Length: 106
Image (cartoon, rainbow, N blue to C red; front, top):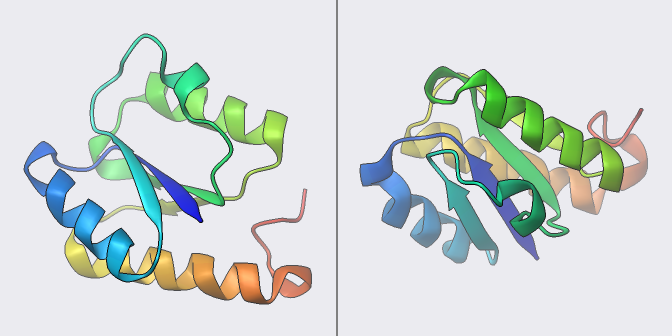
């Protein structure tokens, strides 16, 4: 199981990875725009976008990729530890109760 994090603080990358790992997820974290972000997202279980610390261009690329592959997106204004944990809990709930989840509906 994997997640992709778009945005957030660079100094929190290791914290995001350890939190994701504690919930049983592998994670890819993009705090800055890179050229091949669209191609390297892959097929995660979900994408988390920290809206307060991300550029519009990164958000648009992530949304475009998610739409192509039907990947649910969670948005959080805060990019702290607790907000990240809450996003992961929501993803976990979504996966377990997929037919009830608002994130999968298009």
